[in-house]
Image 1 (cartoon, rainbow, N blue to C red):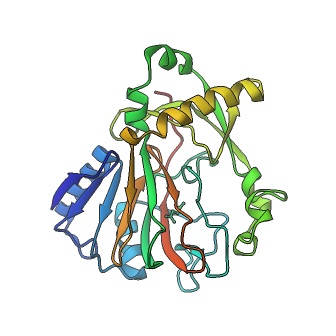
Image 2: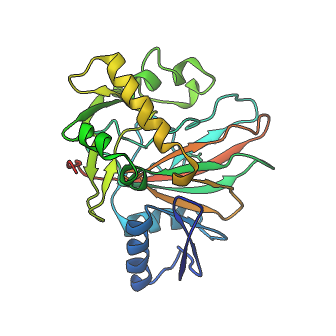
Amino acid sequence: MQVSSFENCGAIVSGLQLAGMTDSQLTELRAAFNQHGLLFFRDQQLPPDEHLRFARRFGKIVVNKFFKTTIEHAEIAEVRKEKTQQTNIGGGWHTDHSYDDEPALGSILVARTLPKTGGNTHFADLAAAYDALPDILKKRLEGLRAIHSNTHLYGENGLYRLTDLADQLGGMDRVGDAIHPVVIRHPESGRKVLYVNPGHTIQFEGWDFNESRKLLDELYGHVNQPQFTSNFNWLPGSVTFWDNRRTWHMADNDYQGQIRLMHRITLAGAALTAG
Ligand code: SIN
């Protein structure tokens, strides 16, 4: 198995088929995942059963509360955009499930139907971004906690509810918030990670909303720089596996009139501890 850094976030793994990996390959893969926080794979033979098998070998699956799942597999979420739809899922920077008390460990996304061009996914490395913050800002973030929510997206008047994505989503009654440290200690690598994201972080606990927005926007501007990001173009057989505790991601919506269908399995995580 070869693991090579990919642009400025993640690594590409070659010489490995995820289906039928040996136990020692799995151990190597875990180490690469914890080192890079994001792995890309090409030319995989990973039908839904094998996708599930790989996920289960890595951890416990958690089912997304809002996305539809495939008919055959209740643990595989569909990230689908039909030819006739304008809005895509995950079109802005976010971290999956940060609105849960125990945010997801990671997500494994498999390309099923791709547009002829476009539909890339961008990623950002929040451990590298934290390391590069000025010391004065690191000091300011010490001890802070932030509120993460999904109500503004999936609730009654939520952004996704008001678009042509609405009939693809379930469970408005499942909306809710969670509070996490703004700087977390990554449970595997021990690195400090900036744990806020534009999709779900609403404000700092105990802070005025506008003051929160100012600092959040400054942090988002810092993360969204080329030195912390990568841009992955999907091909048939491509798979990505990202650590939700360490990365943001965002899918381009530049293929209007074409279908794009991805299968996503999300792995359960645990409560986060301050860094
Ligand atoms: C997601 O936000 O989980 C989906 C990303 C993608 O479709 O590329």
